[in-house]
Image (cartoon, rainbow, N blue to C red; front, side, top):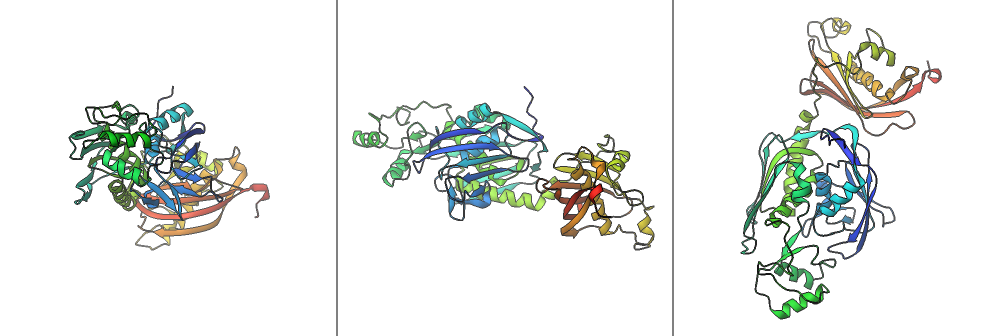
Amino acid sequence: MKPFNTQYQHTLREPIQISGVGLHTGLEVNMTIKPATPGYGIKFQRVDLPDQPIIKADVDYVVDTSRGTTLGLDGVRISTVEHLMAALVGMGVDNAHIELDAPEVPIMDGSALPFVEAIEKGGVQEQDAKKIYYSIDTNIQFTDEEKKVELLALPSLEYKITTLIDFNSPVLGTQHAAMKHISEFRDEIAPCRTFCFLHELEFLLENNLIKGGDLNNAIVVVDKVVSEEELAKLAVAFKREKISVKSEGILNNIQLRFPNEAARHKLLDVVGDLALIGYAIKAHIIASRPGHSSNIAFAKKIKEYIKKNRHAAGVPVYDPNQPAVLDIRRIEKTLPHRYPFLLVDKIIELSDTHVVGVKNVTFNEYFFQGHFPGNPVMPGVLQIEALAQAGGILALNTYQDPENYDTYFLKIDNCKFKHKVLPGDTMILKLELLRPIRRGICEMRGTVFVGNKIATEADLMAQIVRKDSARS
């Protein structure tokens, strides 16, 4: 079996189907998880509705955290997504399209294990696209004084989580759980089931809020003396002949899978809720008394931090000691440009979705003779041209005979010049496809880096045209 390469994105090898019941709605749910292209992320689709709306798995779309994590958009909801999201993260699935014919992800046995096993059965496929991790370089903290909740993200080389719970319960006591590496998720965290206290269960039952609840999909902690009459009512509610209480205080003699299963499940929830950040992170998460509401608020705080600092995470690493993917001779076989207008010296990364090129800027460049003499600055339009040429390499990489095609500008949008490019600078030219190339139209996001700073960025649109049909 090929080893799992965490440096690349992954999707499912083939679609998988899972059916079950929604915990809160009680509705039968048929769910299909399909492969998706690199960069797609995780998206849910309600195929039972006329327009089959799609909702991205993102904290920006969380509309309710009262009884699980619920995504919503324009009145459409998808509830209880946290266990499935945790399973996808734990199995390394970055891109997937999830179709449901009901408003809630099936609860299964209350853990992430059934989802993990389904993903294992379908298989995980490595994709030809690098996975970008965002490192947390400073402490990020969230506190809720009223609920005595504290969440903390610390800088770390790995994604790891420590959870601590204390419900002032003689049954559960004070518990903690830890996941030192995501590879531990499958065996140590995924099997752990959701839990609630008996007084919470009675409230939910009285208000008809867990129509799909069953003693097989949750651990019920008995936190009070229960009469035979109350046990009889519970038996009727759960359609059981009899319900009893173990000496340890667990309803109906449920065998715990781990002594600290409750703390481990809270860790599972943290994994699932923080997956909605939308970015793979490297950090040590310490969660004291976490819950869905605090998890989501914390996820929003981390996402905001990443949005402010992500330009640094996207900086390509240029090692001049490494051989080029395409040297200048190979570039000349693909592009029609020649000195003095060839503005790409070599290509250091190239895939179906992105390209990274290098342009070494020297004082001998022809344009410095007339552009701000005495104060040489590389013209911004030539930086855009350098991006376009590197983008031409990306666009033509999809053709077997690139020398027979040219690329032409159609549009430049959102162009910004942030830092001057001076003699002696090395420009790193990075372009990423915004969407798949269709009918010869190529849309790209281009960025010029000098060191770890963004010098220029723009959205480029070009058309690929066969040379014998191109206009002169």
